[in-house]
Amino acid sequence: MKTVKAAMRPGTSILIVGAMGVGKTTTARVLEQNYGYRRYSLAEPIHRVVETAFPWLKDEAKSIRRTYLQRTGAFLRSFVPNPILRHAEAALENSTGPLVIDDGRTVEEAEWARERGMAVVVLTCEDDERRRRLLARDGALPGPIAFKDATEQEWTRVQAPRVDTTHLSPAEAALALLAAIDL
Image 1 (cartoon, one colour):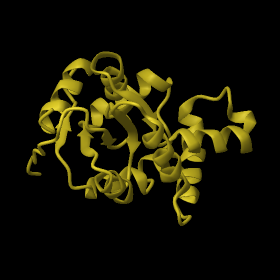
Image 2 (image 1 turned 30 degrees about the vertical axis):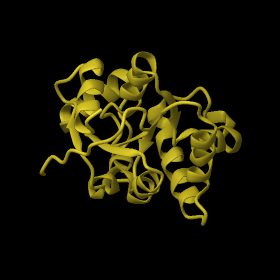
Image 3 (image 1 turned 180 degrees about the vertical axis):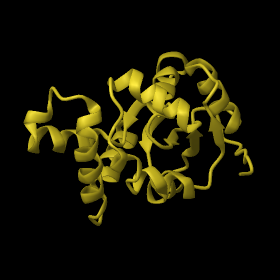
Image 4 (image 1 turned 90 degrees about the vertical axis):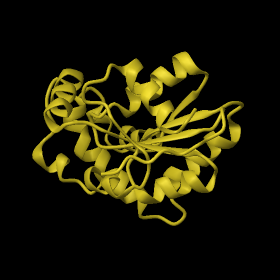
């Protein structure tokens, strides 16, 4: 796929899109710690619903919780207006500086971000490296159904600059992301 660059002004908020294990949250944390961004996760309201509805999952590995998170996310995304984006809208409005929003997965989320003047970047990673990262982070891989979830497929339709994180450290991924959007 062709790499696209978008020229953005400094201080522009960013939405990071991609599949699980590509480094969305890790890269967002580097931007938060080193570049003055405040981090918000689109998954935050999904996690809150899962914690409330399924409290017995609290101590389970993320590989176990993943299916619940994906199904809950699909359910929430089915509402109009989308409550996930309503929460993100509030975070964006209340932010005193640039926001980096991680865990973007859908075309709707990318379009929402662009409508608000945000930069959108898609992170990618080779499958073997993604699985290695997931195993290191979560202690186990999610079941095969998690990899086939709609959110693990739809991000591929997002038209935005792409950064392959396969061979990059988190700091290098953050710099590559900023370079991809000309910040």
